[in-house]
Amino acid sequence: MTISRRTNAVKGMITVPGDKSISHRSIMLAALSNGTSTINNFLTGEDCLTTISAFQAMGIHIIQNDSEITVHGKGLYGLEESSQPINLGNSGTTTRLLLGILAGTPHHYCLYGDESLSVRPMDRVTIPLSKMGATFDGNQQGRLLPMSVRGGEVQPIEYTLPINSAQIKSSILLAGLFTTGVTKVVEPVPTRDHTERMLTAFGVDIGREGNTISLRGQQQLEATDIEVPGDISSAAFFICAAALKADSDLVVKDVGLNPTRTGIIDVLKRMGATIETRITRYIGDEPIGDVTVQGGPLNGITISGADIPRVIDEIPIIALLASQAEGKTLIKDAEDLRYKETDRIQAVVDILHSMGVDIIGTEDGLIINGKPSTLKGGEYHSYKDHRIGMMIAIASLLTDEEITLQEPDCISISYPSFFAHFDQILED
Image (cartoon, rainbow, N blue to C red; front, side, top):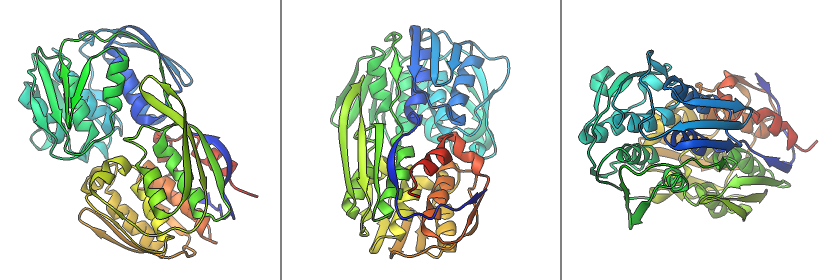
């Protein structure tokens, strides 16, 4: 795919597709609830459709009408044993959260995924789930897919997260629903809390004291209707695009402003961007509102520690932004980027270095010596990673030459309308 998007400004108003994390969780909890739930503004990207097909394979009746999804829940123990292995495609979120649910289900399941998913580590969830009583077997002693799961009578545990991961936390809490006691997860650094908020929306009493989340098992989930806010991680690409161009003025409407996800806003403000947020309403416990950003000069900063869980999905586009900021940007404590759809640290280094950026990869992050400049065009590979593909597309704003993006279809995983929206906000 050839991309040429050089422009003086990014302007206008857009509404991005539904939040990927919330879309996944809405299907899962609706399936475990008693009654029928309707989900509006569901993200119809490939990963979230994978979650739908997985639960259909386990006997859940789900009807899709574009971005409106109707789920006929069958209760906590309503999942059926699948007669065939379940294909989880490229979706790490589906896999890790589903493992938590299947840990408490008295059935046997076989799970597999594509080439990329098959090298992503699953032991980060199977280790605590095994402590709860589930049995796993797969490649590398149960570390990788393909994997078999035999659930049953799981027991509650108290588990301190060894890495800052909402997926691990969510997997344990979902397994905790099936126990007869109280499951506790200790997270040293707060991670995105969509699971906790959505469990509350489905009627589950979940507690938090300090950095410990607790959940009592055997609570019944009751069906509810969900409206999915726009995905802040998808919006980040166009928010950063606007910040890159001095005359830009962009408004993103109806986007999720959950404080565990708005790290990108805080990072941009620290870099000197003119950006404002306005919460317009709440849907359940999730705040929704508008983001307004104007372009201007940027400065390098350090992003580390508690920043990282709140920007982990946005680091590729932040790296591009940092290439145009004055001074050094240091990103550290982000080793988990090496275990995404691809090794995102190495991919970002390879691509931006080829574009002429002074960038170095470290074991757990990036060092970027920024300076506003024109980047080099050419042919670049997406690594079949949607966020890498979108970063390359936004880089076309900074080059006078064409960019050829290999395997752009991966972007449809999270943002099927990305290129249509991209063209919509470019100033003629």
